[in-house]
Length: 561
Image 1: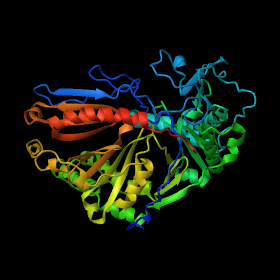
Image 2: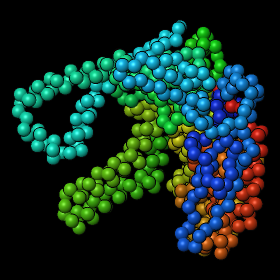
Image 3: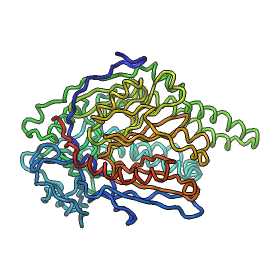
Image 4: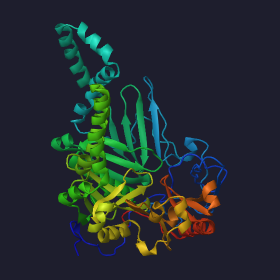
């Protein structure tokens, strides 16, 4: 049954099997405070602040004793490749001892050796290639992109010190300008060519190796079994040139590694080969596997997207601010520069919240494949992203006030180690819940009557707004709702909970109220507020036990199963 306004229907119940390594691994790099305990081998997020004034109280418990990731069969890694039996993780004393997921090695001018870290063994020397490994270069159009770097430096200097730049320009004659242009253009072209010439990448049996640098060489060793997702993006000019950018999500890295640019067909072929090797296919057959087949689940028509943006309060709020605030400033100061300095950021924010979202979320398509849910979207810059199953820590179903008559919702994600944050920009609730079931298998979204409200005395803390809070705990998820005009329902699978905390300020302690915070592996927190103090204390301990049980019973996530 097609939902109103969105092409697609609630898909049939099937099981996906895209491999993800360390489904519950956190990107935290520091241990939590001694005030609480967390999952063994995992850091615990720091306590949030409590109301000022009379010191508040914070109680905390974790899910100690639970393994770092979902249980795996001995002798099998996350991608189905042979590995050693599971062991308890401890903080490494050095990068070499850690066996880094992504290791960078570099050398300075005049040196020709380096070291790489891999799966416990020394990698090949920087600047050298293992026998049988073919190094490849980026697309020949890449120098045009990199040639802008010297020009960007001059523009940045001029913007940073416009007065000095203007004085220098007034001293230049026409001859000097022509000489400068004659030197700058060849220098920029040479820089772009040399950076392209000295950039190589190669795929070995165990890693993707990227070598860059003209004077200072840098080699990145990206272990294939630690790759979480690979996205293909095409900015507008790249689409015209027929090239694409490959972005890789790797466990343990704060930002995405990328290869820019490759031919569009080459980028998709390399993506399919890397995913196949990460899934355990033999190197000699991985390139023959090709891209996994996908089945379209839904597509958001441009008209529905445009109407949804018009019915969003943030769009009208920023537009009104962009009109009213500069007008008031002009009436008060009659200073043009003050008005422009205020108006331009407000106009930019208004454009980003309306036109920018429309351009970025245009033609949003969700498809299902063995390597996860695929998201294709974009009017000018086309993006081809993958939501890796097992790495989703939190799902939020957002329902703005003006969408409720149409039964529309927006679905957002918190994904560990990934920047993907939107699953559906707008969709009927029925279809959205069926897609959520794909991301969180076995999870049913609680209906509004199933959510328990805070006690009525909570109105003394938050008059009227206390009605927007709700809580439901099922066998699969911890569900917390907040917001009165813009409702948001956050779903956290028990197996993804890293720690649980209870907080009370002095006023809430007098009213016997408390907040319970649930921390996830994506370094985010979901909070249920204004609960009865006795109920919150019981929830604190029961949720910790559910998390331990959920992590113990969770199935391993594997790609292309």
